Image (tube, rainbow, N blue to C red; front, side, top):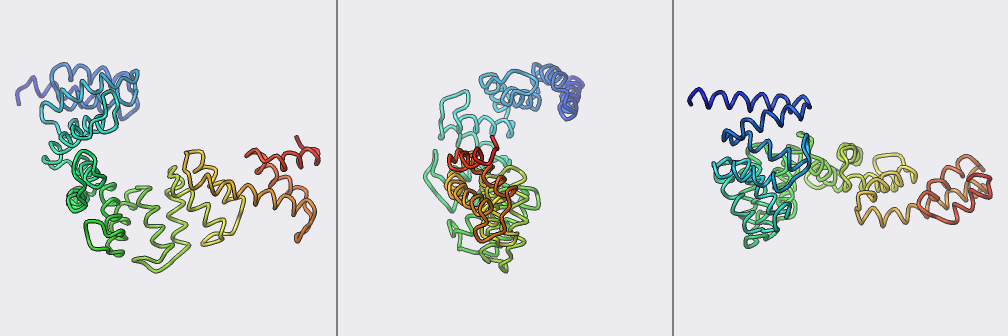
Length: 314
């Protein structure tokens, strides 16, 4: 590598350091300087900044242009990123076949993110013929490089017996590897294995611990299951209020099951309000009655809204 190339790489590295400390303006300036001199790594990072709108106005077209410059130099990360743009139809017409072509170019270089994404295309049959065996092969290549998403996806294939023999113990092993890296989908998947006693001894406490880890990271699937565990009192104290809270968080993300559960939860909250207001089967407690009515009223329950007005609470 000549001195000029070394200098460009140093500029790109300075740009990355600026990005890591949150100085996006400086990062953009340095990445731009290196990108203009043909550095593929800088082109890729600058493309990412335009894709995400960090330090620059979000511009999918410019992101595509920069990714393409780097991809044409054989840079695997850019090839994969460009593939994702085609897969999701961002800045370009959705094209699964082109996405697969780009993923394959990067996967053939050993890029785990591309291997995982190409595996997903084979699993779903998007842009290629559906082939669970090939999906598992690609997931395994990425999983062996500690790619958490691939580990979780391969675990699901083992759990469901798609492309491989069904093996709950192996599914749990893979879920745990990904969960230990903080992957919320794997944490929830492993939590379900503990809840159901598949591949591990049934343990509601451990299931709830894993659901909460994923739920705290915003995973709607886990939030819904944590709500269910509170509703049923499995591994946690039975609490309709806590169940409602978690169903609400998942429903706010558009999760259909949580929305259905939330409707039932509102009815339970209304009933609890009535019980505590009038002392039906419990000691009369106006504060608790108001608490449950307020939760139900916040979801538009007109009975609870009327009850609060009658109790003198707007």
